[in-house]
Image (cartoon, rainbow, N blue to C red; front, side, top):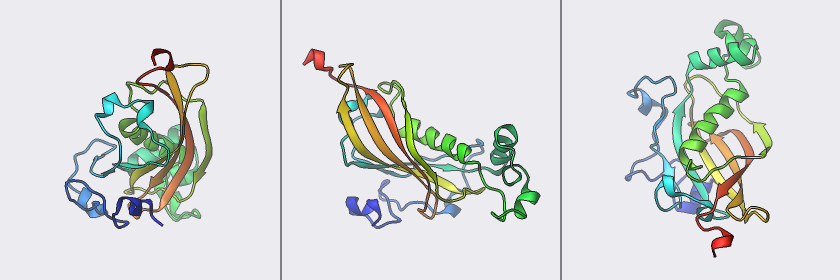
Length: 202
């Protein structure tokens, strides 16, 4: 069952001033930054401003949906030519002859777009102090030019650090959704996040 049901919303609807989740056609009027994004979808139990988000705000079991970012063909090709020299990432004509039937983004490009949304909406620069890594990275669906990606993040674990009283450890299940709400990529991320009140001060 779609996790948006836990917010009392049907699968394709999210609350943004009463608006439905935009369809792919709704993005034709966006401006021309190469990564065109709109923070139109937000379904989250976070309270308070993003800049003041700390470890205590990450509640186990909570589910948060954020952001939109459009995948641009020229960026797929540019990233592929620089980092992943496979024809289905670098050449639109050769990509048509591949098993994908057309150009697709490198999984690492998708991961970069995920991190843009993750750090813009989920991790506050005020409190996030790094990560030891991530687990169970999966690329479930090809990401193609024109796809519109968003994030669904579930807090799996949040515990205080036993060695550093000023921070906690948050483990999150991150899903990258396309405009059809299919999971294109997922991983389990681990982040160190400063506490609003350290154990030493309590």
